[in-house]
Image (cartoon, rainbow, N blue to C red; front, top):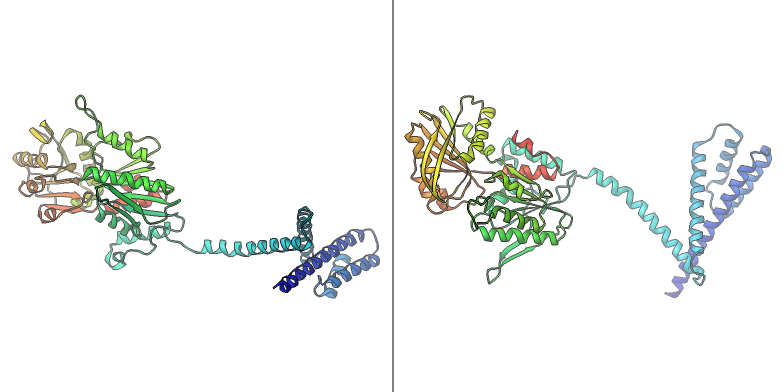
Length: 503
């Protein structure tokens, strides 16, 4: 073992001696070149030959006679050989680097042996050579490769085969594949609020949901654990705060805290249904503004962005600070195609209260623009509540005689207001009455009331998980909001416009 080490060190010493001899020959070569400018050609040729002899003795010149002849010919003529010039520049650069390395070794501690200095110099040269070899193929591989969106899995879900998706979904997937080339890491997580919707969004994006545990301890406390690396990733949490409201909010807060402590680059919460949204102002003394309090809770946990669908009131966006932008998506765009494909007779869009007139007007304008329905009316129902959840009286503003009415609202809770509005419209001469709402809570007797009402059909979105009772209701139709949310996530991640989705 000791003999092998001594032999290797002697070899390194011989290499360094050879390199220094080569550097000395190159210095002689440069001196001869500068001197030859003032002397005759014969004396310069002698100097070049002497320098070449030194190089040949050191083993630093390959094919010495041929190279010497080319150098002499180049000096005797006015035409410079580019290869010779480049070779001289490279040799001068290498000599400068050797001198720099020699100075670095000489500046080391004086008690270091010559073998140690040679070993340090050889190791440094080998490391620089490896770095140069690795940097070239790495850059070429990054330009040629097309990495997928760095999410949980780059493989698309099995259901996303070209034979089982529509033309619009194929176009969306093509855009996703193109954006994968310049996109960073994306992670999609979900709580227990609406796993079906989260899985559908992941399928549209062509990724899998992130691996995480969201369960309960024995005493009922929420247990959250993320099983993937999210450092520096763009993370999205899909969690509606629907019933059970408090459990879902707590899951969302702890998931945000987990990702923030795991050094996620950006945390965007996707809240299809925003709980506590109806308590957005003080209607009487000594009551909280719960919508603002929930916003402050989320903001204090460190979220970076909020995506919601049809907030009960637009001012909820202002409850978040300026550093947390809120994207309030219009769920009505999902219902436009559905009602546009129906054979409606004298359609009239009806708002169930004064606060929803703007929403009903946008729905009317969307039908007129997208499906070329020019003769669409607008009506409004003025309701007077005796207390929360109970309507005392309803008055209609507008004409609905022999018309197909579409009641447009943001949510259906117990369906008491909706069913009474349908009765008023039928009493005023309406031909058929439809209903559309983004959030179908259907609390308590809501599902049974719709089944026994005078409504022709009630259309809702899947922002809230469905149930067997809803599926058994023949008057209830559920549309998917997953394509809209998936497109929004895609545009945010790819730094594209969101307002273009609603034009």
